[in-house]
Image 1 (cartoon, rainbow, N blue to C red):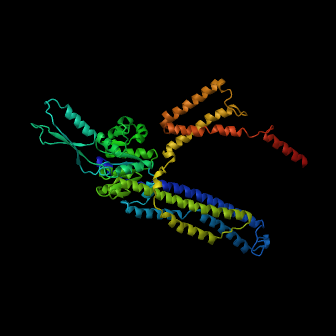
Image 2: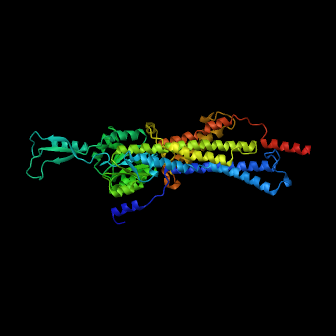
Length: 549
């Protein structure tokens, strides 16, 4: 592509077939349930076949079903087919085939109700994805503000000033600039005129925006503002909407310009993207870059926008939300949900509905698992103890039918409550970090476990592994060198080891998990050890058996 427009359109045209967080979890869950169901069905099949061919089963008249060569081949085939049918019925009941129906009903019901809350869903999966959102990247103009300039302040010159004395005027201009007010002088030409005063124009914030931002933050969702305005205007609006706290200054890295973020190295971008709350003077590719960095760190990102410059970020995000009134068609086509009233308050409503969808599906899964586990346990215990399955195929299918249809209808129509916004977001990854960070933490825990286990190995029989530790200076030095090498590996050899750097909190989690080696080692040492090795006792036992023979 030779133009910026062409590059942006190419990012929009690339379709993504990525699974939503809920779809990924449901696929994992159904796969696990299916494997358990197949295992139980196989065990029931084996147990019933063994009982049948060992002559431990009887027919309705109390006669043994299998009598060796005396039993007809047709009777054997019929009995084996009945046993296989019972096992297959268990598989049918165990596999949650009603789950797609429950998900579809929940999404369709929520989609219909969201229309009355000024949110038109274009993609059904966006409803449940919004329930997992951890970060919302939003525009300023027409989302936080009304895009209607109003006179907020008026500065009138009352004293005469010398021609070269402009310090008082300059101070007023800078002060208005920091308050996000646009300046307009009362003249057209710049020669032979006298400055009478300044008028401060402001694009005021929408009603309810501050409350909506607070609601999202209370729900554990970070709100970031990305704007093309100057850094002072962006900071002032963000402070007014309480995205930024009054004591947050630009030195903390909460406010940056797009060019500054663009010039960071990839490692610096990944390190600082979580701390950024306002990005000013940003281009469409700066917004796209921030969304990509957030997703790489494991965030589920929602993006709001209304213009052509927002289309690429809307397409890249997990959930794209476009504005329905002032948004253009390119933005709407790139989005998943259209906010019909152009109000950020409706974004918070969509977030609430998304969590409601997630909760309703969780309720159905819990309900279905209860029925599945009960049916599996009853049939398995009965097959092992009595040699027959108490719940017939028709009965199990009837239970499954009631569970899938009526249960899904009952639980799919629950409405969202205020309590949903008091919980943290579910997120897409463990600890809300990417898979590569998770792999790095697993590797780090494994190595640190060996470090802690070295202390357990010092004393094979004594429970106090720290006894005399101050005398083993070489041991402490070697342990310290091992820890230093591990820190260097994780923090400075990223490309060589194909790992990610960890923050202080993640290091603390790794150390916490690894330190479990100490109590485990202490507990194991309470297990009594025989005076003679176990293998030697086995040898003596074999020799005794041989003498008896």
